[in-house]
Length: 260
Image (cartoon, rainbow, N blue to C red; front, top):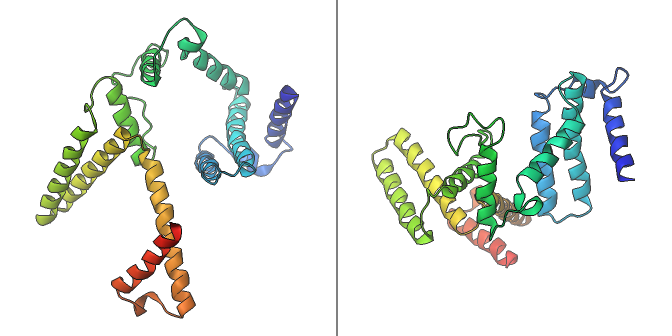
């Protein structure tokens, strides 16, 4: 039944791209679908965050549709098909998990990741990568990319010993930022803020927090509290201009108290 379902999906996507198919689907290319791929990925994440087990299958299906469309576009041009996509990931998973499908023994996740990197460097297509940092997508969200850079550097030993070594670096970056603000050097301020953010991401990594996820949650928390402030002002028949910051902070604290 599973194979029948997958075959039906392949047929549906092929029909959408066929001569008598959907004009929108027929017009798509790898390039035009990039925004959709990103959007569908984030919609999956939202469903996961909401712990919505009813919505998640739908969103995963939308994401799968993106994979199927890209594969069909490639097939239409004679480049490859969904079969090559499936074969590629299957081979890669077996090859990069010798502790599961071979005789390699590992003690923990760190050893799994180190083996993964070593295996990657021996694969075709990776021979021109001269740095362990090569291949990290430039278009990753910056916090996520910073954490990925730091993790890869750490796997080859370029890392602090423990979190207590990271905190002084954070304080150092704050002092350097204060100095650049005092000098009113806009370029230096930007650079020091970047360094501070990079150090905060490093701290996140050491304490087991995903920086991108932490900031997303803080964004959501701020928006929810701000909505509370707006609703309370509306209930009172007031607006932001009717209160100073102290008054608005009091309403903000009410929102915080409700969360607890």
